[in-house]
Image 1 (tube, rainbow, N blue to C red):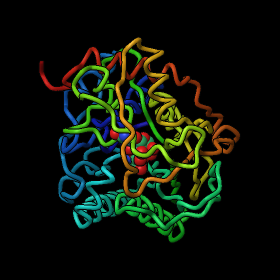
Image 2: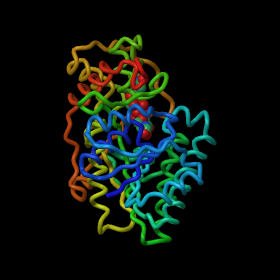
Image 3: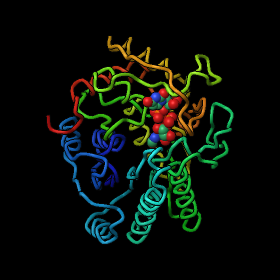
Length: 339
Ligand code: WQD
């Protein structure tokens, strides 16, 4: 299929491009490089031995979006583009609502105008209400998001759901990610956060590399086995492969479909630290620090629906996630920036 990948130069989007190209699809990437580097796409081509088309553009630019659809015939769209820093979204809510909702609305309007009505949306576990019982199923309560970033994912899901309700010609896949970590085993692409990493695994990797003095463990007094936060970490390559499975599922399944993409297994922050040290032989010094505002004690999913209906199940282990994170970090101490 001819696939448009918005945000395809980013962490998850680029790994999805690898799997799409490996599966024989043709790929066009639209990315404004606000939080990505074009070098990443050159490496995607190196990994796969295939080529993709890259358009540096902003999805808020309606003229550019129209021109893109006027000059291509897309079979479906994978929509990754969006701002995604939880803390930043609390500081800059209007920027997040304008960007994340505006891009989704412009994209869908342009898709509809060109008869393209298949979309996979990069959603997040943050759309689930914080008070759900674990493990979280797709039928669990949503809303009550603890930050504007989470609300933009929740509202984008609603926009797509209402679009499909108004026009049954649409097929919408809402893919709710839990905690993607790791990197392609080649070590050529991986997570390249700008500035101080918000997320746990890049912070662990940078600490192991000596770029950070020590890890602050946000909270040691949660009601969890070792007192630290528990999350459902999954390898980014498993996540990317989930998108190919979801794309295959779309044929013959119009309407809106929701899937959790996770392992169904929760690991604590200290589990991650110890697993990383065991897998890499590197030390990760840490201190127990106060809880981070907005965090919950534990979040992990029930992945049974994706396994049953998509035939997809996460296969990489925690050791693989840690080993591949370190492989990327150690080979690319400055990320994609030229050495
Ligand atoms: C994981 C655990 C922290 C950093 C968020 C978004 C989600 C997705 C992934 C974008 C928690 C602890 C973290 C650190 C720590 N983002 N931690 N020290 O918050 O579960 O999910 O990122 O798509 O949508 O909500 O991920 O990696 O920030 O935190 O102790 O320096 O690690 O308290 O328990 P989170 P995270």
